[in-house]
Structures are given as C-alpha cells and as structure tokens.
Length: 221
Picture (tube, rainbow, N blue to C red):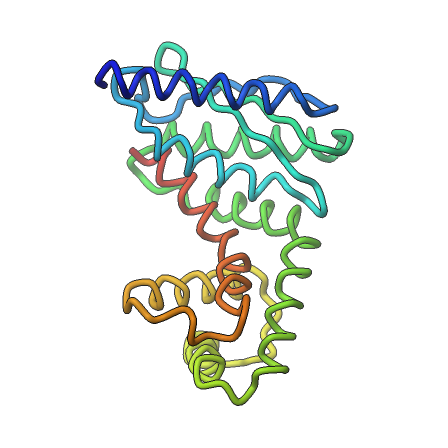
C-alpha cells in the first residue's frame, strides 16, 4: 500500500470512529479473522463494501447502523452502533452471526452448506420487517406501472426464475431481485427509462442476498 493510500485509510478510520461515537448506543467490539487482511493489503473499496454488507444485515427495522472496521494484526475488529438500544435478541443474533462466520472461515475453502444455509435463514428472519417493507414498495411500483415495458420485463424474469408469482420465500425473492438488478447493470440499460425508484427498490430487496453472499465470499478466501 502506498503512503498516500495508507493516509487515506487512516483518515477514513478517523471519520468512521467519529461517526460511531456520535451515536447514542455503542455495541461491543467483535473480533474474528477476515481472510488474511493486513495494513499492507487492505483495499479501501473492500472495507467499504464489507461495512455496507454488515450494515444491511444488522438493520432489523427502522434502525440506522454504523459500522467501523479496523484491521489489527491480521484480524478485523468490528465496532457497531445504531440509533436505537441494543436488545437481547440483537446481541444473540450478532453472536450467532459471529459463530457462523467463524465456522465458514475455519472450513474454507470448502463450502459449509448447513452453516451457510443457517446464516441465510437467520439474516432474512432478523431483517424480515425491513425486507417486507421494501418489498411492499416494489409491489406498489409493479401495480402502478404495470404497463411499463421494464416492469413487464421484471415480472417475466421473476416468473421464469420462480415459476410462481405468489411465492412468499423472502430468500428467493431477494435472490431474484439481485440477479435482475445485476443483469440490468451488465446490459447497461438507461436507468432514466425505468419508472422512478423502481430499480432502487429492486436493488434494496436484492441487497440482502448480495450482502450475505459478499460476506461469505470474504471468508472463503
């Protein structure tokens, strides 16, 4: 890492630390290994993405979660805060997530199917209120803009992947939304042609699968 990049990294850490302690509630530090990260190989973009992934799966309802990552001697210290009190079920959830990730890291590069499946299930269950709220907004878009060609495109895509438009599996719905959004990105569609906020709602519904897969990928390295 160049001196300039290291300076940027330290500045970013200071900003995150300031943001973290400006919140009313600060959680305990969680320590566990993230690949073989160190000050020399840490990428700012990787840290940013990982922070976003964690913030997504830690926001249960209307909370805003702040995440600060600090690399110390090959370990990633994760500091959390949010604008609501930490409840017992929040702490239990974080403990479970930590255990899942330790197991995934321990067994890497082999895939721990049972552990990863439990991880997926716990995240979607914990975040179900916020996920359902975002899904309702997407459904409202589909109803209001039913005649739009891009809305029809999404409905056809969803039906082809799921086979049943009444499917209520939140994991599957998030997965399909994530795949559709990536397809739109890959095809470089002009987002201005889509109904307002439609793509954003698809992205947000799909962000849960994106976050879970992104976190697991870090532990498979």
